[in-house]
Image (cartoon, rainbow, N blue to C red):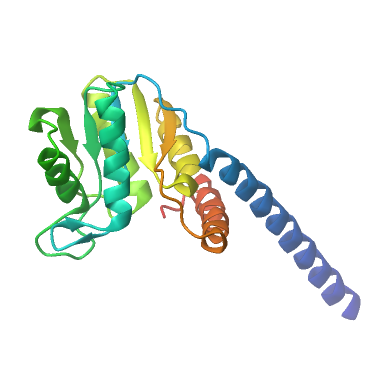
Length: 197
């Protein structure tokens, strides 16, 4: 009986070690992707949502939107899509706040597409990809924080789109950024396993 328990314990430790190594390797790939700006001409710029404060974009969302404005100003795409639901906010959505911010900076309303239902990355990407497909578009520049790009690219590629990552310019502190790589690696593994996070 003791041998069986020991063997089961050893097998569990080996499985955990393999999982930890897989997560760290994936986190390294995510880190490498996080600094690469692949921006080039595409059909649409997709801005991933982030927090908004009663109708105003948070600093993170504003940095993403400003980066999208730069890409739009360089004429890399003729449309911008903002994403993100309400997150419990009774009046505003991340996508709607993004749209208002872009319009206040000179982007015409007809050049902006909005997804306002997604409450997670998986939901927002699924909804955004469906909208993009229905519009007959095929290529996307994804704007988000660097640590987010790898997973989002794979999700959109999985839906048959050509995807280029373009991380926002502002960086967060290295210790927090490293944790974000690990967190995104776990999120990616869960997504591949069919868990929507």
